[in-house]
Image (cartoon, rainbow, N blue to C red; front, side, top):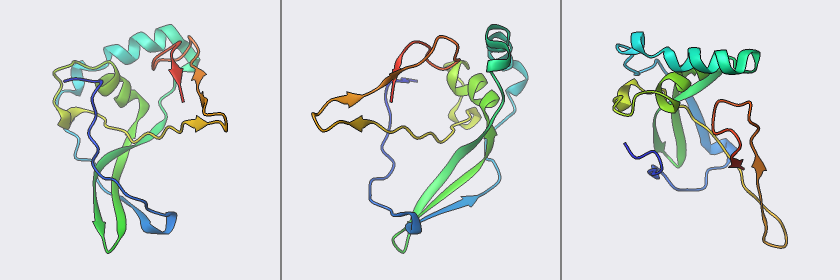
Length: 132
């Protein structure tokens, strides 16, 4: 799997009254979870209290119905993300991955400069790297 590539699943403008979030049961295949705790344990030892298992939403699917975006999500967690998508085996099937929904915004100043921040060294996900 090439982690630097991504797919654009949908493009459009949907105002807040045109987005419906539907909570559904998870379709994630957890049959391989037994061997997937090492990344979390390693990062927990490295980061201690700074690493916590927060709630996240897993992307389950979407469709456009009558001009409205229906986004189907299920519950997942940061621990599952760390053990599957972030540090999990590269050959882990997509059905076993966390696939959380994330949002990043990039600010462009009036002079055309893009504003980024540098992540600290005490984070699990891309420490010391630039991030919007």
